[in-house]
Length: 119
Image (tube, rainbow, N blue to C red; front, side, top):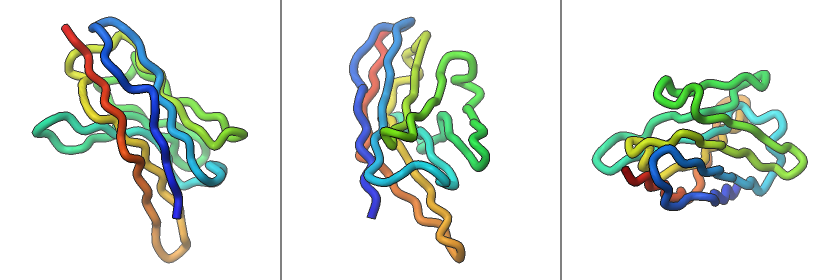
């Protein structure tokens, strides 16, 4: 079992910044995929930014140029630096880890952290 603990959410004015952290209970090296998703009220959960195989990154078009995903393997932690926040970024942000078990993938989710951007 893997535990993921998010932190760093809060209330911020439009144009402001926040940095989210996700600490994992195991090594994040050689993970198939790890990153951030978000879910706004009444909407489906969506990808925000992820590390994929080979250390490459994917970003949602809506956050490109504003959000940056990073990681510290020594701390088993990934981060999401969010700049120029907009009210439409308001959501619960979740950390997800996907582990390749060979015959199948295991996915783990954190409990989520609320980000609220006021206009």
